[in-house]
Length: 205
Length: 198
Image 1 (cartoon, rainbow over the protein chains, first blue to last red):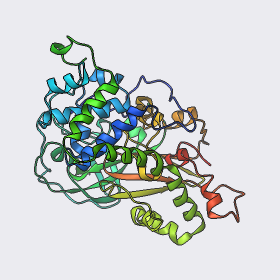
Image 2 (cartoon, chains in turn orange, purple):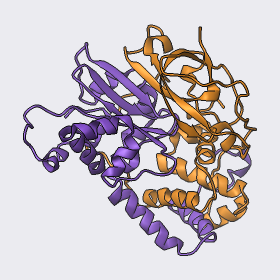
Image 3 (spheres, helix red, strand yellow):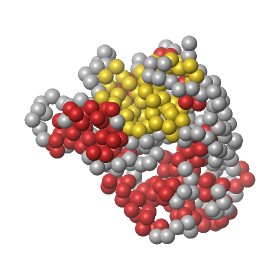
Image 4 (cartoon, chains in turn yellow, orange):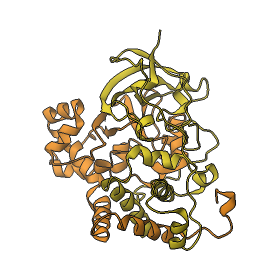
């Protein structure tokens, strides 16, 4: 889905709020929220792709204003309700107020039937597919051509794994792009590497 | 906030929402409070950038280890006793040189090799870094205090799959003869992310 989370290359954001030695956590509830998500994975309540997708489905205004760990908690809570661990009413009763959750999920998909194996040096193009469910290729490389740098071991295919759909694990490729090809005349010169699943790629001329 | 039919009452404070979810998770297993304490401890005390720093220091003093690290990061860090979560199946170590600066990011969320680098700092997870570092890499690095010469190639690695990345910074001049431990002491988290040079 094309949603608010897919931020790469979006313009209009201000300076990085950088501080040396910046911390990962600031409040005890953040540590707890992070631990709850980790425990939910350990208990088999959710997998990483379901979790990522649940965050991606947050209502855009909520997504942009929530802190990182609020987004994490919202994703976890959404899955707890969707998987029937608790009703939304019961969750809100326990929280003593409204508990904003993510938007409903749209269907996922399985691997591309015609996917092929690539080798370092191969020129590849990112397919133009637009899908309603979870997808893990950033919009800024869609339709763009790059060069395969290396192959990683096979992982669960996110578009299926986030939706409980059967699929084969497939390799990802670190694909190299020129920033000027991604954003002509409006990017700092750089080489951009993106980890891309096999099903998102086709051979480029 | 999001659902129009549910704005009749105020959003619960975040701490209350955390407690509500904890009560749900607690129904799914034994000793949940203790497990959460342990997970919180691991996240803060065991997944720390000093792990990555030790890997870098070893790579600086041991050329054979460096080769293994660049060939298969996950296996090489395991030699030093460092584990990575199951879903981090592959670690790619990115070597800086006088003419190359590698930088890692995650434009879609906050993926990192956190068992080696530590859980990411605020700015790494902020919308600004995620949106801008791929498109305005040099500008962003300069804002963060790293002003690179024009001839240095910037390589930005977006963590969009489950492969994880860590930067291998250059060993600073003047550290000849230092012990591995002393070398590890000068490697910073921001150096492992690639937004600082040592």
